[in-house]
Length: 168
Image (cartoon, rainbow, N blue to C red; front, side):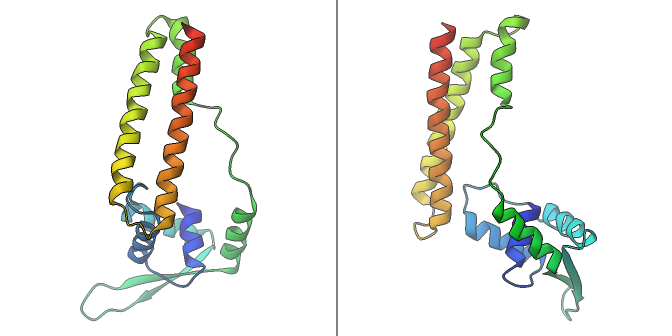
């Protein structure tokens, strides 16, 4: 969340609700909606770190609002973030840990775990398909997010099939 907020501030000053709205508009309904409280906590931390500066703006008919601007250090942080590749493929997978430990502990059947996980992935894919059908077609970022999630799920389903073949 912190780097996404910093990146949004590179296009100009904003207050927390504007940043929340910008994330929601950009990513659509497929991405978990940010909590405004989390946004303001993160903005406070970014300000303490010197990556942004906040300024209170008086409003006659409402409580004052705080407008945030990115600092030079914040801009450097965003630039470095865009330069770095994203983390490698996940090898610390919670489901795989369950699958590996099930036979050793005797507390769960590996094939039952696979079937339960498969149902979960299929339900998630169905939900994403419904979401893709109602998501704004002009919001290509949101459509790409949904498509990427579905492709990852398909790969996970293929991997579950492989696990089941090995374990039967």
